Amino acid sequence: MRVTKAQAEQNRAHIVATAARLFRERGYDGVGVADLMAAAGFTHGGFYKHFRSKADLMAEASASGLSQTAARTEGLDPAEFVERYVSREHRDGRGDGCTIAALGGDAARQPADIKTEFAAGIENLLTALQPQSDTPGDADQRAARTMVIDMLAHSVGAVMLSRACPDGSPLADEILDACRKEILASLAHHNSEQPAVRSPET
Image 1 (spheres, one colour):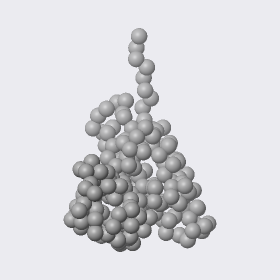
Image 2 (tube, helix red, strand yellow):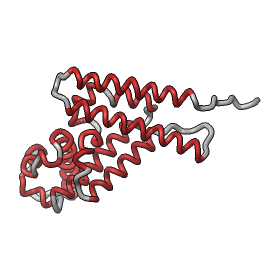
Image 3 (tube, helix red, strand yellow):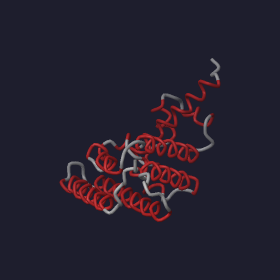
């Protein structure tokens, strides 16, 4: 039975989504093409109808996962993001969590095309998290961007360190609790230093 173009596109998207989840759970080297295709419900041989290589799929799955993370962040202020991100639920839900925290270490050892996808994904996430300044200007934007970069790096590091500990380890929870508290305190301090918004004159 011949597969239509629309069905082929749906199959490809399903493979990418499955790969993004499995890569987050097991790492790029932790899942082979055969296992990945089986998890997606297809045969091994069908892989090369959609992708030239596993590396191509790795790049596309990374881009997809990073886009999902940015989309889930839309509408959250930095403090809300930290509360959700630096949490036990996120740490324990590796397959459905942030691609940066799950694969950032792996990406550092991958080819340039995967690093490029990560750089673009990180940039999109920073943009989604950066508060809009009431007093726009180069200095204000730089300060806001610096704050968001620090917050994101601290949050990602907290989740990665916690995951590196044994499941159920008291240290794993302690890392999350300590980092979440410090990040939120840093955000509160930053916000307290911002000029108050003036009401428009009537």
